[in-house]
Image (cartoon, rainbow, N blue to C red; front, side):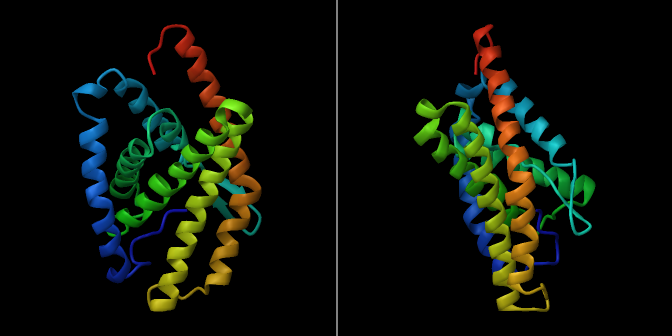
Length: 211
């Protein structure tokens, strides 16, 4: 799902950074200050887990693969901006140490995978969590991943429209290649992961873990 370096022109990457930078500042100042000391162990653990699961590739038909994101939990438990900051850190580490994604496209990837998707998951759970329980958690994880996937596909489509030199693949092809595996495979796994992890965290909370 990551957009690699070189796929997007400055026409897109610079505005993405312009949007992401103040959100990073607000998120860090509001949710990672002194008042967040008690929650940092859980936030750090979920961020590390997201880093790990994003490196696990799920094979899909057509000779390609897809992967989970895993930060919807951070949005559900805390706030979408917490998920945004944490996923941005994950993406930065992946870009620097593993060459996944990239530094120039960090703003785009962070907004798509760290903000839009988790915000959608947070909204779904806020609306349905009290009445649907685990079903709401599954739907939150599923919908969040679809929003992230569509956002990335839309950016690539926009780049193709602006300049095929950066991304020569037509939107209809790239959209189908990304959304079909996400809707049929990865989204289901992401939803199940969200349910499972949220259930474990709730059990841990009952045993004295402060979330």
